[in-house]
Image 1 (cartoon, rainbow, N blue to C red):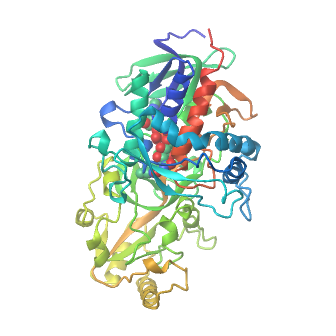
Image 2: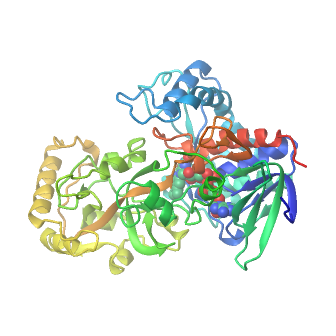
Image 3: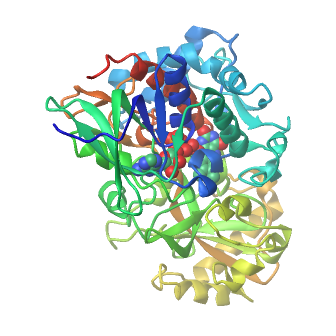
Length: 532
Ligand SMILES: Cc1cc2nc3c(=O)[nH]c(=O)nc-3n(C[C@H](O)[C@H](O)[C@H](O)COP(=O)(O)OP(=O)(O)OC[C@H]3O[C@@H](n4cnc5c(N)ncnc54)[C@H](O)[C@@H]3O)c2cc1C
Protein backbone atom coordinates (compact mmCIF):
# COMPACT_ATOMS: atom_id res chain seq x y z
CA UNK A 1 0.00 0.00 0.00
CA UNK A 2 1.33 3.43 -0.92
CA UNK A 3 0.82 5.91 1.89
CA UNK A 4 2.48 9.26 2.35
CA UNK A 5 3.61 9.24 5.94
CA UNK A 6 4.16 12.61 7.59
CA UNK A 7 5.49 11.44 10.94
CA UNK A 8 6.94 8.24 12.26
CA UNK A 9 7.69 6.57 15.56
CA UNK A 10 8.00 3.04 16.87
CA UNK A 11 4.78 3.26 18.87
CA UNK A 12 1.86 5.60 18.24
CA UNK A 13 -0.42 5.98 21.25
CA UNK A 14 -3.93 7.24 20.52
CA UNK A 15 -5.45 9.20 23.43
CA UNK A 16 -3.86 10.68 26.53
CA UNK A 17 -5.56 9.39 29.65
CA UNK A 18 -4.32 7.00 32.33
CA UNK A 19 -4.02 4.12 29.87
CA UNK A 20 -2.34 6.03 27.05
CA UNK A 21 -0.05 7.96 29.36
CA UNK A 22 1.21 4.85 31.16
CA UNK A 23 1.52 2.89 27.90
CA UNK A 24 3.57 5.67 26.32
CA UNK A 25 5.88 5.98 29.32
CA UNK A 26 6.52 2.25 29.53
CA UNK A 27 7.05 1.91 25.77
CA UNK A 28 9.58 4.74 25.95
CA UNK A 29 11.31 3.18 28.96
CA UNK A 30 11.50 -0.08 26.98
CA UNK A 31 13.54 1.71 24.32
CA UNK A 32 10.88 2.72 21.78
CA UNK A 33 10.42 6.06 20.11
CA UNK A 34 6.89 7.11 21.03
CA UNK A 35 4.36 9.75 20.04
CA UNK A 36 0.95 10.42 21.61
CA UNK A 37 -1.86 11.83 19.47
CA UNK A 38 -4.64 13.46 21.46
CA UNK A 39 -7.97 14.65 20.08
CA UNK A 40 -8.53 17.61 22.40
CA UNK A 41 -6.62 20.89 22.27
CA UNK A 42 -4.07 21.25 25.06
CA UNK A 43 -5.76 24.19 26.80
CA UNK A 44 -9.11 22.39 27.05
CA UNK A 45 -7.87 18.83 27.48
CA UNK A 46 -9.99 17.02 30.06
CA UNK A 47 -9.87 13.27 29.78
CA UNK A 48 -11.98 11.11 32.08
CA UNK A 49 -8.71 10.47 33.89
CA UNK A 50 -8.28 14.13 34.67
CA UNK A 51 -11.93 14.52 35.73
CA UNK A 52 -11.76 11.47 37.98
CA UNK A 53 -11.47 11.04 41.73
CA UNK A 54 -7.92 9.83 41.17
CA UNK A 55 -8.51 6.61 43.13
CA UNK A 56 -6.68 3.49 41.99
CA UNK A 57 -6.04 -0.03 43.18
CA UNK A 58 -2.56 -0.56 44.53
CA UNK A 59 -2.53 -3.74 46.60
CA UNK A 60 -0.02 -3.94 49.40
CA UNK A 61 3.24 -5.36 47.98
CA UNK A 62 3.55 -7.41 51.19
CA UNK A 63 0.17 -9.12 50.67
CA UNK A 64 -0.04 -12.81 49.75
CA UNK A 65 0.48 -13.13 45.94
CA UNK A 66 -1.63 -16.29 45.68
CA UNK A 67 -4.51 -14.62 47.53
CA UNK A 68 -4.20 -11.55 45.32
CA UNK A 69 -4.29 -13.71 42.22
CA UNK A 70 -7.41 -15.50 43.48
CA UNK A 71 -9.12 -12.19 44.25
CA UNK A 72 -8.17 -10.72 40.88
CA UNK A 73 -9.39 -13.82 39.06
CA UNK A 74 -12.73 -13.55 40.83
CA UNK A 75 -13.04 -9.93 39.71
CA UNK A 76 -12.11 -10.59 36.10
CA UNK A 77 -13.98 -13.83 35.53
CA UNK A 78 -17.01 -13.20 37.74
CA UNK A 79 -16.77 -16.89 38.63
CA UNK A 80 -17.60 -16.29 42.25
CA UNK A 81 -20.99 -14.77 41.80
CA UNK A 82 -23.74 -17.05 43.06
CA UNK A 83 -25.48 -17.23 39.70
CA UNK A 84 -23.12 -15.95 37.08
CA UNK A 85 -24.60 -15.91 33.61
CA UNK A 86 -22.43 -13.20 32.13
CA UNK A 87 -19.62 -15.28 30.64
CA UNK A 88 -16.94 -12.64 30.59
CA UNK A 89 -13.42 -13.50 29.50
CA UNK A 90 -13.01 -16.87 31.22
CA UNK A 91 -10.30 -17.62 28.62
CA UNK A 92 -8.11 -14.77 29.79
CA UNK A 93 -8.99 -14.45 33.47
CA UNK A 94 -6.26 -16.78 34.73
CA UNK A 95 -3.47 -15.01 32.84
CA UNK A 96 -4.83 -11.59 33.67
CA UNK A 97 -4.99 -12.48 37.35
CA UNK A 98 -1.36 -13.56 37.21
CA UNK A 99 -0.41 -10.24 35.63
CA UNK A 100 -2.47 -8.31 38.18
CA UNK A 101 -0.93 -10.15 41.10
CA UNK A 102 2.56 -9.39 39.75
CA UNK A 103 2.23 -5.77 38.67
CA UNK A 104 -0.76 -4.10 40.40
CA UNK A 105 1.09 -3.91 43.76
CA UNK A 106 3.63 -1.66 41.98
CA UNK A 107 1.00 0.89 40.91
CA UNK A 108 1.60 3.54 43.57
CA UNK A 109 5.37 3.15 43.37
CA UNK A 110 5.24 3.47 39.58
CA UNK A 111 3.33 6.74 39.83
CA UNK A 112 5.77 8.06 42.43
CA UNK A 113 8.64 7.10 40.13
CA UNK A 114 7.24 9.56 37.58
CA UNK A 115 7.27 12.39 40.10
CA UNK A 116 8.68 11.97 43.62
CA UNK A 117 6.35 14.74 44.86
CA UNK A 118 3.30 12.66 43.99
CA UNK A 119 1.64 11.05 47.00
CA UNK A 120 -1.12 8.57 47.67
CA UNK A 121 -3.64 8.52 50.48
CA UNK A 122 -5.27 5.29 51.69
CA UNK A 123 -8.88 4.92 50.73
CA UNK A 124 -10.29 1.39 51.10
CA UNK A 125 -9.60 -2.34 50.93
CA UNK A 126 -11.29 -5.30 49.17
CA UNK A 127 -14.82 -4.35 48.14
CA UNK A 128 -15.86 -7.99 47.79
CA UNK A 129 -15.02 -9.53 51.16
CA UNK A 130 -16.52 -12.90 50.20
CA UNK A 131 -14.29 -13.39 47.15
CA UNK A 132 -11.47 -15.91 47.52
CA UNK A 133 -8.25 -14.28 48.64
CA UNK A 134 -10.02 -11.15 49.92
CA UNK A 135 -8.72 -11.62 53.44
CA UNK A 136 -5.02 -12.06 52.65
CA UNK A 137 -4.57 -10.24 49.34
CA UNK A 138 -3.66 -6.95 51.00
CA UNK A 139 -6.07 -5.33 48.59
CA UNK A 140 -5.88 -1.55 48.79
CA UNK A 141 -7.29 1.44 46.96
CA UNK A 142 -5.46 4.74 47.22
CA UNK A 143 -6.23 8.27 46.12
CA UNK A 144 -3.91 10.58 44.17
CA UNK A 145 -2.68 13.72 45.84
CA UNK A 146 0.15 16.24 45.81
CA UNK A 147 -0.98 17.98 48.97
CA UNK A 148 -0.84 14.82 51.08
CA UNK A 149 -4.55 14.80 51.83
CA UNK A 150 -7.62 13.52 50.05
CA UNK A 151 -10.40 15.83 51.04
CA UNK A 152 -13.89 14.74 49.89
CA UNK A 153 -14.70 18.38 49.27
CA UNK A 154 -11.98 18.89 46.70
CA UNK A 155 -12.63 15.73 44.76
CA UNK A 156 -13.40 15.96 41.08
CA UNK A 157 -11.90 19.09 39.73
CA UNK A 158 -11.77 21.69 42.46
CA UNK A 159 -7.97 21.78 42.39
CA UNK A 160 -7.92 22.19 38.63
CA UNK A 161 -6.52 25.72 38.61
CA UNK A 162 -4.25 25.37 41.64
CA UNK A 163 -0.52 24.90 41.71
CA UNK A 164 0.61 21.28 41.27
CA UNK A 165 1.58 21.06 44.93
CA UNK A 166 -2.10 21.59 45.87
CA UNK A 167 -3.63 19.21 43.38
CA UNK A 168 -5.72 16.23 44.42
CA UNK A 169 -7.76 13.47 42.79
CA UNK A 170 -7.75 13.11 38.98
CA UNK A 171 -6.00 16.46 38.65
CA UNK A 172 -3.09 15.08 40.68
CA UNK A 173 -3.03 11.84 38.68
CA UNK A 174 -3.04 13.74 35.39
CA UNK A 175 -0.32 16.16 36.56
CA UNK A 176 1.85 13.21 37.57
CA UNK A 177 1.38 11.56 34.17
CA UNK A 178 2.29 14.78 32.36
CA UNK A 179 5.41 15.10 34.51
CA UNK A 180 6.47 11.58 33.51
CA UNK A 181 5.74 12.23 29.85
CA UNK A 182 7.47 15.63 29.77
CA UNK A 183 10.58 14.46 31.59
CA UNK A 184 11.05 11.79 28.92
CA UNK A 185 10.47 14.20 26.10
CA UNK A 186 7.66 12.07 24.64
CA UNK A 187 5.83 14.37 22.21
CA UNK A 188 2.09 14.87 22.62
CA UNK A 189 0.34 16.08 19.48
CA UNK A 190 -2.82 17.78 20.78
CA UNK A 191 -5.78 18.69 18.64
CA UNK A 192 -5.00 15.63 16.54
CA UNK A 193 -7.89 13.14 16.48
CA UNK A 194 -7.12 9.73 15.02
CA UNK A 195 -9.71 8.61 12.52
CA UNK A 196 -8.43 5.56 10.63
CA UNK A 197 -5.94 2.75 11.02
CA UNK A 198 -3.49 2.17 8.18
CA UNK A 199 -2.75 -1.44 7.19
CA UNK A 200 -0.17 -3.04 4.94
CA UNK A 201 -1.19 -5.58 2.27
CA UNK A 202 -1.05 -8.42 4.79
CA UNK A 203 -3.40 -6.72 7.25
CA UNK A 204 -0.72 -5.55 9.69
CA UNK A 205 -1.38 -2.21 11.38
CA UNK A 206 1.37 0.17 10.28
CA UNK A 207 -0.02 3.51 11.24
CA UNK A 208 -2.91 5.80 11.84
CA UNK A 209 -4.46 8.73 10.04
CA UNK A 210 -5.43 11.78 12.07
CA UNK A 211 -7.87 14.35 10.72
CA UNK A 212 -7.61 17.91 11.90
CA UNK A 213 -10.57 20.29 12.13
CA UNK A 214 -9.28 22.29 9.11
CA UNK A 215 -9.73 19.13 7.03
CA UNK A 216 -6.03 18.29 6.72
CA UNK A 217 -4.84 14.72 7.33
CA UNK A 218 -1.64 13.55 8.98
CA UNK A 219 -0.48 9.98 8.46
CA UNK A 220 1.55 8.58 11.36
CA UNK A 221 3.73 5.57 10.65
CA UNK A 222 3.94 3.21 13.63
CA UNK A 223 6.99 1.03 13.05
CA UNK A 224 6.17 -1.35 15.90
CA UNK A 225 2.56 -0.83 16.99
CA UNK A 226 -0.46 1.39 17.51
CA UNK A 227 -1.99 1.46 20.98
CA UNK A 228 -5.63 2.56 21.13
CA UNK A 229 -6.31 4.21 24.48
CA UNK A 230 -8.91 6.74 23.42
CA UNK A 231 -11.64 5.88 25.88
CA UNK A 232 -15.17 4.56 25.65
CA UNK A 233 -18.22 5.61 23.62
CA UNK A 234 -20.19 7.59 26.21
CA UNK A 235 -20.97 10.34 23.73
CA UNK A 236 -21.58 8.34 20.56
CA UNK A 237 -25.28 8.23 19.70
CA UNK A 238 -25.09 5.40 17.19
CA UNK A 239 -22.99 3.19 19.43
CA UNK A 240 -25.28 3.85 22.38
CA UNK A 241 -28.23 2.75 20.27
CA UNK A 242 -26.36 -0.32 19.05
CA UNK A 243 -24.93 -1.49 22.36
CA UNK A 244 -27.03 -0.28 25.28
CA UNK A 245 -30.20 -1.74 26.63
CA UNK A 246 -33.33 0.42 26.94
CA UNK A 247 -33.80 3.92 25.56
CA UNK A 248 -30.09 4.32 24.86
CA UNK A 249 -29.98 8.00 23.97
CA UNK A 250 -32.70 9.89 25.84
CA UNK A 251 -32.82 7.34 28.64
CA UNK A 252 -29.12 7.20 29.54
CA UNK A 253 -26.52 9.75 30.64
CA UNK A 254 -22.79 10.02 31.33
CA UNK A 255 -20.86 12.64 33.26
CA UNK A 256 -17.35 12.19 31.85
CA UNK A 257 -15.62 13.82 28.92
CA UNK A 258 -17.68 14.36 25.74
CA UNK A 259 -14.47 13.62 23.80
CA UNK A 260 -15.03 9.91 24.35
CA UNK A 261 -17.01 9.12 21.23
CA UNK A 262 -15.91 5.55 20.61
CA UNK A 263 -13.45 6.50 17.83
CA UNK A 264 -11.05 3.69 18.70
CA UNK A 265 -13.84 1.10 18.72
CA UNK A 266 -14.99 2.28 15.31
CA UNK A 267 -11.46 2.33 13.85
CA UNK A 268 -10.63 -1.17 15.07
CA UNK A 269 -14.05 -2.63 14.27
CA UNK A 270 -13.73 -1.38 10.70
CA UNK A 271 -10.62 -3.53 10.22
CA UNK A 272 -12.27 -6.62 11.69
CA UNK A 273 -11.72 -6.34 15.46
CA UNK A 274 -14.01 -8.39 17.66
CA UNK A 275 -16.14 -6.88 20.41
CA UNK A 276 -16.72 -7.85 24.01
CA UNK A 277 -19.52 -6.95 26.44
CA UNK A 278 -19.89 -3.61 24.73
CA UNK A 279 -23.05 -2.67 26.63
CA UNK A 280 -21.31 -2.94 29.98
CA UNK A 281 -20.82 0.30 31.94
CA UNK A 282 -19.59 1.36 35.37
CA UNK A 283 -22.87 2.93 36.31
CA UNK A 284 -25.87 3.60 38.45
CA UNK A 285 -28.62 6.21 37.98
CA UNK A 286 -27.60 9.84 37.65
CA UNK A 287 -29.15 13.18 36.92
CA UNK A 288 -29.03 14.57 33.39
CA UNK A 289 -29.91 18.00 32.06
CA UNK A 290 -31.10 19.04 28.63
CA UNK A 291 -27.72 20.67 27.83
CA UNK A 292 -26.32 18.50 25.07
CA UNK A 293 -22.99 17.41 23.60
CA UNK A 294 -23.04 15.41 20.35
CA UNK A 295 -26.84 15.53 20.68
CA UNK A 296 -26.80 13.73 24.04
CA UNK A 297 -27.85 15.06 27.43
CA UNK A 298 -25.02 15.82 29.84
CA UNK A 299 -25.02 13.75 33.01
CA UNK A 300 -23.99 14.91 36.46
CA UNK A 301 -22.49 12.96 39.34
CA UNK A 302 -25.48 12.99 41.69
CA UNK A 303 -23.81 12.44 45.03
CA UNK A 304 -26.85 13.67 47.00
CA UNK A 305 -28.62 10.37 46.42
CA UNK A 306 -28.59 8.14 49.51
CA UNK A 307 -28.16 11.07 51.89
CA UNK A 308 -30.80 12.12 54.48
CA UNK A 309 -33.98 14.00 53.44
CA UNK A 310 -34.17 12.34 50.03
CA UNK A 311 -35.74 9.30 48.40
CA UNK A 312 -35.71 7.84 44.89
CA UNK A 313 -38.95 6.72 43.24
CA UNK A 314 -39.80 5.26 39.86
CA UNK A 315 -41.76 7.07 37.16
CA UNK A 316 -45.01 6.26 38.99
CA UNK A 317 -43.91 7.48 42.41
CA UNK A 318 -42.93 4.15 44.01
CA UNK A 319 -39.67 3.50 45.89
CA UNK A 320 -37.88 0.40 44.58
CA UNK A 321 -34.52 0.07 46.35
CA UNK A 322 -32.38 1.36 49.16
CA UNK A 323 -31.20 4.72 47.86
CA UNK A 324 -27.83 4.18 49.51
CA UNK A 325 -27.08 1.30 47.13
CA UNK A 326 -27.17 3.81 44.28
CA UNK A 327 -24.12 5.72 45.53
CA UNK A 328 -22.26 3.13 47.59
CA UNK A 329 -19.19 1.24 46.32
CA UNK A 330 -19.42 -1.39 44.81
CA UNK A 331 -23.21 -1.41 44.10
CA UNK A 332 -22.96 2.02 42.47
CA UNK A 333 -21.04 0.45 39.61
CA UNK A 334 -23.81 -1.96 38.74
CA UNK A 335 -27.03 -0.35 39.92
CA UNK A 336 -27.93 0.70 36.37
CA UNK A 337 -29.03 -2.88 35.83
CA UNK A 338 -31.84 -2.37 38.35
CA UNK A 339 -32.95 0.73 36.53
CA UNK A 340 -33.34 -1.26 33.31
CA UNK A 341 -36.23 -3.27 34.76
CA UNK A 342 -38.81 -3.74 31.99
CA UNK A 343 -42.55 -4.31 32.42
CA UNK A 344 -43.49 -6.87 29.78
CA UNK A 345 -47.22 -6.14 30.12
CA UNK A 346 -47.16 -2.36 29.75
CA UNK A 347 -44.01 -2.43 27.57
CA UNK A 348 -42.54 0.21 29.80
CA UNK A 349 -39.31 0.94 31.66
CA UNK A 350 -40.90 2.19 34.89
CA UNK A 351 -37.53 3.28 36.33
CA UNK A 352 -36.38 5.38 33.37
CA UNK A 353 -36.17 7.99 34.50
CA UNK A 354 -36.38 7.52 38.23
CA UNK A 355 -36.84 10.62 40.38
CA UNK A 356 -34.82 11.93 43.28
CA UNK A 357 -37.28 13.62 45.61
CA UNK A 358 -35.86 15.89 48.31
CA UNK A 359 -36.91 18.66 50.64
CA UNK A 360 -35.83 22.18 51.52
CA UNK A 361 -33.46 21.05 54.29
CA UNK A 362 -31.43 19.07 51.75
CA UNK A 363 -31.56 21.87 49.19
CA UNK A 364 -30.11 24.25 51.80
CA UNK A 365 -27.28 21.88 52.78
CA UNK A 366 -25.50 22.36 49.45
CA UNK A 367 -25.31 21.15 45.89
CA UNK A 368 -26.87 17.74 45.26
CA UNK A 369 -24.44 17.12 42.38
CA UNK A 370 -20.62 17.44 42.09
CA UNK A 371 -20.47 20.99 40.80
CA UNK A 372 -16.70 21.17 40.27
CA UNK A 373 -16.82 18.10 38.05
CA UNK A 374 -19.65 19.68 36.05
CA UNK A 375 -17.57 22.78 35.31
CA UNK A 376 -15.28 20.71 33.05
CA UNK A 377 -18.31 20.45 30.80
CA UNK A 378 -19.17 24.15 31.29
CA UNK A 379 -22.20 23.44 33.47
CA UNK A 380 -22.90 25.97 36.23
CA UNK A 381 -25.25 24.30 38.74
CA UNK A 382 -24.70 26.63 41.72
CA UNK A 383 -23.62 25.58 45.20
CA UNK A 384 -27.05 26.29 46.71
CA UNK A 385 -28.93 24.55 43.85
CA UNK A 386 -30.83 27.79 43.12
CA UNK A 387 -29.40 28.28 39.65
CA UNK A 388 -30.37 24.71 38.77
CA UNK A 389 -33.93 25.41 39.95
CA UNK A 390 -34.01 28.60 37.91
CA UNK A 391 -32.82 26.68 34.83
CA UNK A 392 -35.55 24.09 35.30
CA UNK A 393 -33.00 21.32 35.95
CA UNK A 394 -34.54 20.85 39.40
CA UNK A 395 -38.35 20.83 39.58
CA UNK A 396 -39.93 22.57 42.57
CA UNK A 397 -43.34 22.22 44.21
CA UNK A 398 -44.87 23.85 47.29
CA UNK A 399 -46.51 20.50 48.06
CA UNK A 400 -45.79 16.93 46.99
CA UNK A 401 -48.96 17.02 44.88
CA UNK A 402 -47.75 20.10 43.05
CA UNK A 403 -44.35 18.47 42.52
CA UNK A 404 -45.99 15.32 41.18
CA UNK A 405 -47.89 17.42 38.63
CA UNK A 406 -44.64 19.03 37.44
CA UNK A 407 -43.02 15.62 37.09
CA UNK A 408 -46.03 14.38 35.08
CA UNK A 409 -45.47 17.24 32.67
CA UNK A 410 -41.76 16.54 32.24
CA UNK A 411 -41.24 15.16 28.70
CA UNK A 412 -39.48 12.01 29.96
CA UNK A 413 -42.21 11.14 32.48
CA UNK A 414 -44.98 10.98 29.89
CA UNK A 415 -47.71 11.52 32.52
CA UNK A 416 -46.87 8.43 34.51
CA UNK A 417 -46.31 10.07 37.90
CA UNK A 418 -49.17 9.51 40.32
CA UNK A 419 -49.51 12.08 43.12
CA UNK A 420 -51.18 9.65 45.54
CA UNK A 421 -48.44 7.03 45.04
CA UNK A 422 -45.69 9.58 45.56
CA UNK A 423 -47.32 11.08 48.64
CA UNK A 424 -47.78 7.62 50.14
CA UNK A 425 -44.14 6.68 49.37
CA UNK A 426 -42.92 9.78 51.20
CA UNK A 427 -45.32 9.26 54.13
CA UNK A 428 -44.22 5.65 54.57
CA UNK A 429 -40.52 6.53 54.27
CA UNK A 430 -40.89 9.31 56.86
CA UNK A 431 -42.53 6.76 59.17
CA UNK A 432 -39.45 4.54 58.77
CA UNK A 433 -37.22 7.51 59.59
CA UNK A 434 -39.17 7.99 62.80
CA UNK A 435 -38.72 4.30 63.67
CA UNK A 436 -35.00 4.39 62.66
CA UNK A 437 -35.43 1.34 60.41
CA UNK A 438 -36.44 0.90 56.78
CA UNK A 439 -38.23 -2.48 56.64
CA UNK A 440 -38.95 -2.05 52.92
CA UNK A 441 -35.38 -1.77 51.59
CA UNK A 442 -33.14 -1.86 54.64
CA UNK A 443 -31.60 1.53 53.91
CA UNK A 444 -28.74 2.35 56.25
CA UNK A 445 -30.20 3.90 59.43
CA UNK A 446 -27.67 6.76 59.40
CA UNK A 447 -29.11 8.01 56.10
CA UNK A 448 -32.76 7.96 57.20
CA UNK A 449 -33.70 11.64 57.29
CA UNK A 450 -37.34 12.51 56.51
CA UNK A 451 -38.57 14.32 53.42
CA UNK A 452 -40.85 16.78 55.18
CA UNK A 453 -39.82 20.40 54.86
CA UNK A 454 -41.48 22.21 51.94
CA UNK A 455 -40.89 23.19 49.27
CA UNK A 456 -40.11 19.83 47.66
CA UNK A 457 -37.81 19.16 44.74
CA UNK A 458 -37.29 16.54 42.05
CA UNK A 459 -34.61 15.67 39.53
CA UNK A 460 -34.78 12.88 36.93
CA UNK A 461 -32.23 10.06 37.24
CA UNK A 462 -31.18 7.96 34.25
CA UNK A 463 -29.06 4.82 33.92
CA UNK A 464 -25.46 5.87 33.37
CA UNK A 465 -22.43 7.10 35.25
CA UNK A 466 -18.81 7.94 34.52
CA UNK A 467 -17.97 5.63 31.64
CA UNK A 468 -18.58 2.65 29.41
CA UNK A 469 -16.44 -0.45 30.01
CA UNK A 470 -17.11 -2.87 27.21
CA UNK A 471 -15.54 -2.46 23.82
CA UNK A 472 -12.85 -4.19 21.82
CA UNK A 473 -12.05 -7.82 22.41
CA UNK A 474 -8.46 -8.06 23.61
CA UNK A 475 -6.39 -10.81 25.16
CA UNK A 476 -4.39 -10.64 28.38
CA UNK A 477 -1.47 -8.89 26.60
CA UNK A 478 -3.97 -6.31 25.34
CA UNK A 479 -3.62 -7.37 21.71
CA UNK A 480 -6.79 -6.60 19.77
CA UNK A 481 -8.41 -9.82 18.50
CA UNK A 482 -10.49 -10.41 15.41
CA UNK A 483 -13.71 -12.44 15.48
CA UNK A 484 -11.72 -15.67 15.23
CA UNK A 485 -9.65 -14.57 18.23
CA UNK A 486 -6.52 -14.03 16.15
CA UNK A 487 -4.48 -10.99 17.20
CA UNK A 488 -4.61 -8.17 14.65
CA UNK A 489 -0.86 -7.67 14.12
CA UNK A 490 0.63 -4.62 15.80
CA UNK A 491 -2.63 -3.36 17.33
CA UNK A 492 -3.19 -2.99 21.09
CA UNK A 493 -6.03 -1.50 23.12
CA UNK A 494 -6.12 -0.59 26.77
CA UNK A 495 -8.25 1.36 29.24
CA UNK A 496 -11.91 2.13 29.07
CA UNK A 497 -11.98 1.15 25.38
CA UNK A 498 -11.55 -2.50 26.40
CA UNK A 499 -11.85 -2.68 30.16
CA UNK A 500 -10.71 -5.75 32.00
CA UNK A 501 -13.58 -5.13 34.46
CA UNK A 502 -16.50 -6.25 32.39
CA UNK A 503 -18.93 -7.05 35.15
CA UNK A 504 -17.56 -6.91 38.69
CA UNK A 505 -16.07 -3.51 39.48
CA UNK A 506 -14.54 -1.94 42.53
CA UNK A 507 -13.94 1.84 42.60
CA UNK A 508 -10.44 2.72 41.39
CA UNK A 509 -10.36 -0.15 38.90
CA UNK A 510 -10.25 1.97 35.76
CA UNK A 511 -7.20 3.99 36.70
CA UNK A 512 -5.56 0.84 38.06
CA UNK A 513 -5.96 -0.95 34.75
CA UNK A 514 -4.70 2.18 33.03
CA UNK A 515 -1.48 1.82 35.00
CA UNK A 516 -1.03 -1.96 35.22
CA UNK A 517 -2.26 -2.92 31.77
CA UNK A 518 -1.24 0.33 30.09
CA UNK A 519 2.33 -0.41 31.11
CA UNK A 520 1.96 -3.98 29.90
CA UNK A 521 0.64 -2.87 26.50
CA UNK A 522 3.49 -0.36 26.24
CA UNK A 523 6.07 -3.04 26.93
CA UNK A 524 4.62 -5.51 24.43
CA UNK A 525 4.18 -2.82 21.77
CA UNK A 526 7.79 -1.70 22.16
CA UNK A 527 8.95 -5.30 21.77
CA UNK A 528 7.18 -5.87 18.42
CA UNK A 529 9.45 -6.48 15.44
CA UNK A 530 9.71 -3.20 13.54
CA UNK A 531 7.96 -2.94 10.18
CA UNK A 532 9.98 -1.69 7.24
C1 LIG B 1 -15.98 12.20 37.32
C2 LIG B 1 -15.31 10.85 37.19
C3 LIG B 1 -14.74 10.28 38.31
C4 LIG B 1 -14.06 9.05 38.19
N1 LIG B 1 -13.37 8.58 39.28
C5 LIG B 1 -12.59 7.48 39.12
C6 LIG B 1 -11.69 7.07 40.14
O1 LIG B 1 -11.54 7.72 41.19
N2 LIG B 1 -10.95 5.94 39.93
C7 LIG B 1 -11.04 5.22 38.76
O2 LIG B 1 -10.36 4.21 38.62
N3 LIG B 1 -11.85 5.60 37.78
C8 LIG B 1 -12.61 6.73 37.91
N4 LIG B 1 -13.38 7.15 36.87
C9 LIG B 1 -13.32 6.42 35.61
C10 LIG B 1 -11.96 6.70 34.95
O3 LIG B 1 -11.68 8.07 35.07
C11 LIG B 1 -11.91 6.32 33.49
O4 LIG B 1 -12.51 5.10 33.22
C12 LIG B 1 -10.44 6.27 33.07
O5 LIG B 1 -9.83 7.49 33.37
C13 LIG B 1 -10.32 5.95 31.61
O6 LIG B 1 -8.97 6.11 31.23
P1 LIG B 1 -8.59 5.96 29.72
O7 LIG B 1 -7.15 6.29 29.63
O8 LIG B 1 -9.05 4.68 29.18
O9 LIG B 1 -9.48 7.07 28.98
P2 LIG B 1 -9.59 8.69 29.19
O10 LIG B 1 -8.97 9.12 30.46
O11 LIG B 1 -10.98 9.04 28.95
O12 LIG B 1 -8.68 9.21 28.02
C14 LIG B 1 -9.05 9.05 26.68
C15 LIG B 1 -8.38 10.15 25.88
O13 LIG B 1 -8.52 9.83 24.51
C16 LIG B 1 -8.81 11.02 23.79
N5 LIG B 1 -9.43 10.66 22.52
C17 LIG B 1 -10.71 10.29 22.26
N6 LIG B 1 -10.86 10.02 20.96
C18 LIG B 1 -9.65 10.23 20.36
C19 LIG B 1 -9.17 10.15 19.03
N7 LIG B 1 -9.98 9.82 18.00
N8 LIG B 1 -7.86 10.45 18.78
C20 LIG B 1 -7.01 10.84 19.78
N9 LIG B 1 -7.44 10.96 21.06
C21 LIG B 1 -8.73 10.63 21.36
C22 LIG B 1 -9.70 11.80 24.74
O14 LIG B 1 -9.74 13.17 24.41
C23 LIG B 1 -9.02 11.50 26.08
O15 LIG B 1 -8.04 12.48 26.37
C24 LIG B 1 -14.05 8.36 36.95
C25 LIG B 1 -14.65 8.94 35.84
C26 LIG B 1 -15.26 10.17 35.93
C27 LIG B 1 -15.85 10.78 34.70
